[in-house]
Image (cartoon, rainbow, N blue to C red; front, side, top):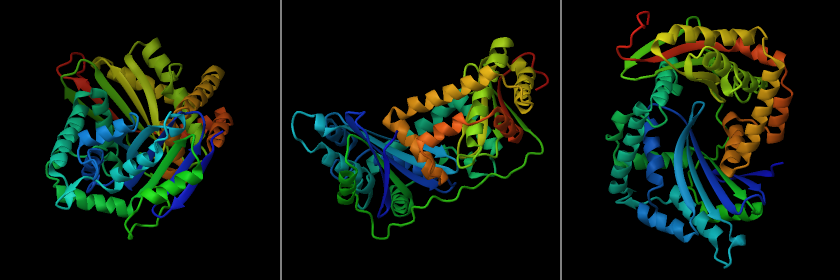
Length: 432
């Protein structure tokens, strides 16, 4: 189904997917490092600075103009946390020159521009340009501050801080607001050089392309420092072994109309495990869809919640429940959510819940891989987990899951932490 070739060059792994499905060529550059307290904020700021200017196009305006000249190419960078890793993703999409009326070398120019974003940033006096760093500090601080205004994201952030307080996973992928202003251009540039020397780099090129031609383009344009690490083997994941003896319950009060109830479960299953597919189906039956137990029982039957759903983190092995409730309904909502988990542990899963969930998961996968970015994200799971699972194997894996498999996973899933953001001065909440 997917023609995925992988080539290890000096310092970078190139993934090519040849397909005639798109009239554009997509580049997705993934830069991975284990998340850590020392660098998390610098790394977040770096992702903003890299997309703000290059040696040849030393300002945002000039960089945007260069993209316009490439028939309206797009370029953006963002951050994500995949398990214990903080990943910078730089994405670029350009028109495929095969479909243009003239013979401009768009592909070659695109490779040059992307390589400049990574390897030839805009500098002055040997470090990042001060005006760019100042501007991007403001953007990063706004991004961090916006989490407080979005109460669902805020509650999720606080749940992770409490649940993983002694593990790197508690760190916010955008870093610490208080550290942003303390980072100098020189410190940021020193860290950038560490990234270029040591981080794992994966470049996905997707479109109507030739693998051999893409490899030659990478060799031509991506010239890494001589001391660039050859180590491209995925770091072994820090497997979570913590056993839960007591559920942590955290309450916080703010001036909000709707309480945010977030619950974190440890699953002891990650992407590389054989029962990963059963975990996917577990999450789907539990709270992943509108037919799931949480939506039907917490929201529809009991009218307790404005929303009630669950999601899982493939590389950390966690399931998170999110629900918006009236503060007075806290005890009842927690009780019913726990009951839905017990139902699954006892095997009370209807045929309709089970089959509809598997069909919905497969539809989600097909929709995701229909877009180049989604396709690269699915394939990148293998890099993060150190596996080599094809998309066909992935879909067969879901299909082969049995109810007994889901029950086994449900029995491993363990509630760790409950975080409740309740309204200030709300009546009827004396017991919390």
